[in-house]
Image (cartoon, rainbow, N blue to C red; front, side):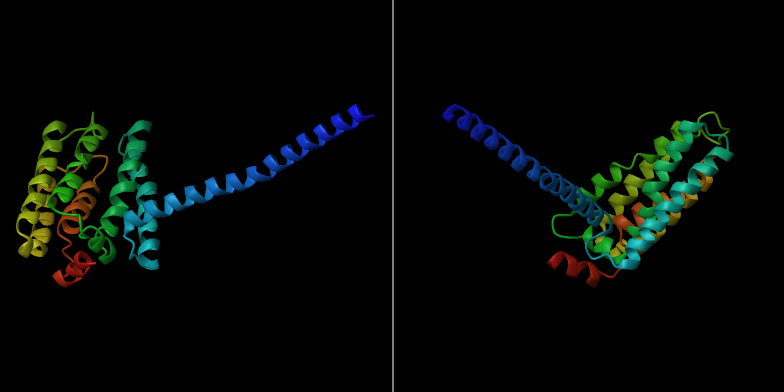
Length: 228
């Protein structure tokens, strides 16, 4: 009888342990989901700036979505293969939303916060090797200049313009406007992309008018961000 009671007690202990472990699993799962959501929120805040308004959030999402839908349609109608339409979509997701959000006050202040100096701005520009992707997208299409020359000209112009804006901070606002216009004129001289004709109109406003120069915003706006 005592042996039977001992076995029963052991079984009950195992059942209680299993119930305890099972009860904890959903909580761990919820914690993982919560952490994932927090990571997404942080990434979005770093993209739009922590001070972004509800309108900024909505317009960033809207411009990104419009670019993601329209760009592959345009590319497809102009002869792009399936891989090309995917590339056009990815380019537009970055550039169409970025052209808007990088020109908002919240984003300008975020990119001029303490720790964000000339080196960070130049690195950000250097990472935007999008002209090479556009040249690849246009492969096989009739162009005014070879794709490699087209891509190199746009990329070098971006880097040189970013360096000029950061070298003369007192003139950043007019320089941002003038060099953005210069980028559009360069695109016209070289011949716009065949399958992403919108490219320069998003690339330069995002990176020169917005990120490098914050041309829409006064020194006082940016100074407040640096002092925080």
